[in-house]
Length: 166
Image (cartoon, rainbow, N blue to C red; front, top):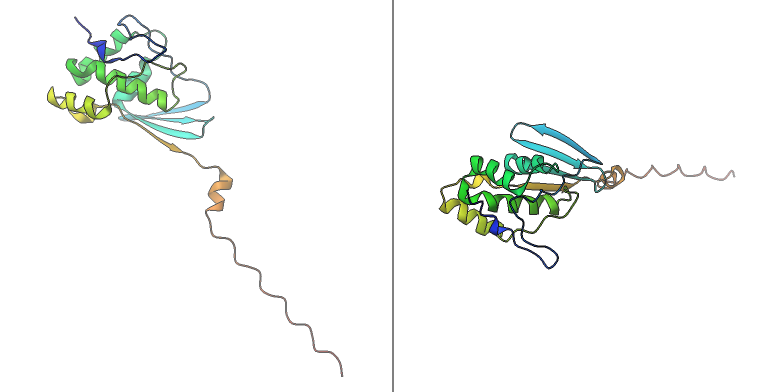
């Protein structure tokens, strides 16, 4: 079976990802992970960012364990999103996970923009809802949260001094 990993482009420091190449490792230190139905929530304790991974991004991230290859991931994604777009979905998911700081090592950057990947997915009859999505928000510190509150009202003025004796 031809895996179609040509969509993994290479940057100036890398070569294209091969089917037998191991996926980058997912971060496991300083992150809190909570799986909920249909998605995974990841809080990065270092950057103070919360990330929400949809089911497709979660599948890719779970395979970034040092044991799975790009070929393994494409085959698993082909079952979920359809064979023509699986390599593109993998490339996009790895790029988003890297941008969110959820991978230990930098993957090879995808050769497709998200828009182009979605176009190819829709042309092959694959639902756009299966595209990988990593949403990130920064958690504010307690001090920053408190600074958004209005200041307390000023204390009442002191009573006027008593009149001088006559």
